Image (cartoon, rainbow over all chains, first blue to last red):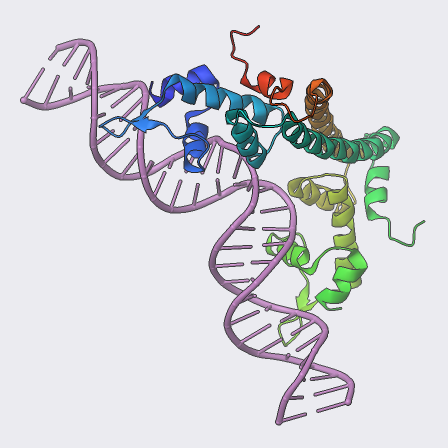
Length: 132
Length: 132
DNA sequence: GATAGGGCTTCCTGCGGCTGGAAGGTCAAG
DNA sequence: CTTGACCTTCCAGCCGCAGGAAGCCCTATC
């Protein structure tokens, strides 16, 4: 299998697959002409990576997860911990974004949005620390 | 005002302020010795930037917002549009993160998290496209 | 056998928004 | 005169790729 076919079957761009090889996440054989020659196991690994990345795991998380996946003596607790920590980071991000959303929603709804220059959004951004 | 004082009063790291100057968001005078000399208006501008960034606006959004702020002939509709588009991007991010959170929460809760290797998280990541 | 096209290769740059660190100038205090 | 805190510039790195240049390989067609 050349990179094009693997890209199509895994759903990952060829660029990304080359990058994953560069950072050691996958190690396909090489044909005599220098082309990467992927086997089914490589494809499976890449698909695994694609799904882990889609769930937001970092590349380093993926490295860990792949290692656990390959280790028959793993403890599911180790996998769970990785996922839980990731979940914590996601919750934190959501909370931060929701705080922004709340403020922004309020500002947007209070702005007339007409041709006049007066704007509570700008007023809020321009308020000084003294403006309690 | 030197950069240290401005950093403290604006809450922005000095590094960030230098960066903002580099990309043209602020343009302090210079003392004969080469030190940046900030005036109150510069500080105000930086505080504005700090608040806009805290609300998640991109640097380019900030540039636009600063320009609108400085323009007495602006239309509040222009400000509102910038904020609304930003709000849309935030909503999209939250939605993506919540989708991840949902899947991850389910996976985490279904994993025993003990010393045995069997793990539904890994099983899910490793499922093939055929596994419907 | 020449040519055209697609796919493959490597290498370098750039994205956003900073952050860290090195090497060196400047200033006030002791 | 030295110390130490400040300031300066410049360069590298973060994450996870994406874009593009330059060039090789392979197949098909004329």
